[in-house]
Image (tube, rainbow, N blue to C red; front, side, top):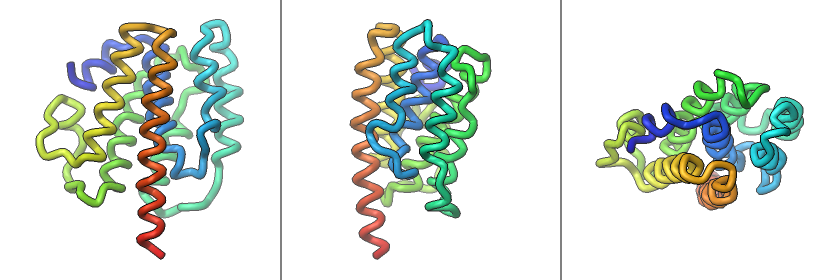
Length: 184
């Protein structure tokens, strides 16, 4: 099943986790660490805490709100993902946010991959991955895995979704580090 189809079929928790996972994998661009989004992940695990999502989101935005990297397209895309997150994770806007995060995350990975082509990422989201660079293809796989795990296991799949996200965050952190060394 394509990523577009998985997003279309995901429930509220799956959509919120999908968007959060994309943001989580890209948080190194904003200087965030492994614990930055942990409170939001914890909120997804408990359905009764859904009302706290907005407050936790604001706290996260305050931690990550920095002008560092302004003008860098990848950093701007991460800021937009964070800014667009709906204050209520049960709201209808969460589907739009998850979809936008998916596109933005793939675009970020394309921008950071020296082997990447300049083409759009939409074809990969629809299942056509031929010619996709390794970094972008790996991000696409992570997005699919997160949605499949949550569709198959519900709340109990959050741990695996977080593991996949952590792996992707470490990969992106290494890419960002290599990129910074190359500039100096």
